[in-house]
Image (cartoon, rainbow, N blue to C red; front, side, top):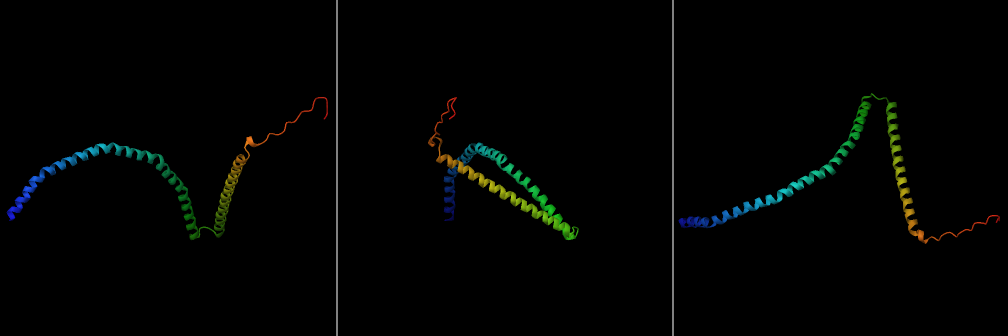
Length: 157
């Protein structure tokens, strides 16, 4: 019985082998065709990605790093000032002056921001009013002013 089982498996393998080889060859050919078809598209996508990165992402990254430099410098200066104050290298008078200076700068910054915001709101309101005024009183709807006659020469009135 064992002999019949092995021979049956061998016979099945002999029958299936040509189909398996054909399927393998077809799969290899399909993979090569897919590679030939997709390779140019993949190169184009990679090129487009590089162009997009260079045009859109890289400038923003550079701006972000450039914007971080003043913040980093300010943080370093504040850290150094804090260490100096903790070590007692700054007098209380210098410390109060620095605090007043910081508060004054913050107040001035708030004033500038509020003034700018008020200017934007006022400008937007003016533009909206002019637009609305032009919509409600078009030139063709306004009646012309009455003609005035000029007095003749030699008469006074």
